[in-house]
Image (cartoon, rainbow, N blue to C red):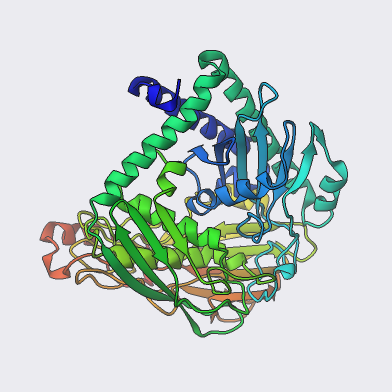
Length: 546
């Protein structure tokens, strides 16, 4: 039998079972980890692949992780993986994205023959480098950003390489926490093999392999149908990043998106050359951002797997911002440049799919990293902001936008784990752009640091506001503030790393989303609701609790 012989009911059963394996992997990782970045924020992703390295199913985790995962599996396939192996990697030039995102790839071989691969990717709160949290704003080489791991056997034929494990832990801050997080990732890969073994018992080995092919074929056919509904043509757009931590100059990203029948090609020719600073993004990251946009403008019910990606081609000149050459620094590219790629590709496709493209959201992950100088703690968080207004609805307030899908760290967990106190966490009244449908509100998060520490910020949209569409007004820009003891709060750069004394207050005000449509067309009922919910007014007044 072939994949074509699987009937629709069996196909749907298998698809859901494959996705449940990926979901359970994620639950094992989240519940087994130790660091709040994984247990609370859930900054991790899991998926299963077939023996050829094609993604079969993913958990609904982090877009920037998942779209780039195939590169990691391809990199491992070049090293002849065998049953019982587990490969570890984070090298952005060999299958990774940025160094804090550490990936484990494990062959799934319940019957001593590789059926597929279990993959987990988790953002570790520290992976070494020049600053706590491994996201230094001023990095100019990847060597400054942390420990670089090409695809290497962490487990060889069932035996963990304790020397390699010790070497990794010797080069990171807070190694006990890192050890627990790595063990949780290993447990997730083991769970995938156990669950697929159960499915083999239920359906048979050959039927599972046919099911892999069938779900991929199904998604490919569905995405091609959806793309074919878009008008053919080449659509162009550009936007800028606000400096790279070394220079404050604007950095341009250009995209030409060509829809041709059932295929889409995105070419980033014309994008600025790779940078001295760390906003360079490996091509896998840019590709992941493109995949995300294509998924947003097509049928959201299409199962996400390799079939969704096949009709999409992404190209960028070697040596440019989106396809840098080593030893380029890249830690900000994964978190900030990916957001701007998303904005640019959405903007390019606004003419082709106007009802599916929202106004610009906050366009940044608002990365805040605070770490003890002695390596005793490393806090990392991305902070939500405004989602852009849509053709049929307002934007959402205080949410993660674009390439991230993490939760926030609850105040109780944050204060229990770190020497930090949350003094304010609120929506920013008036930060969403006016429109027929308003942009969502940004947030304000204010933390008091209770010991000497290093603070790093990697943020965007502090100078160029998120734009509205179809007559909608822009959202508010963000702002970063530092208040040293006995001093007034002062605005600091969008990308900065600074040592601060105890009792320093760090405030991050995140951008709002742009509005959609003519503000004059907004109904009186909705305007009254805006006033009642305090979405309009002076942003310095106290906002709603987030």
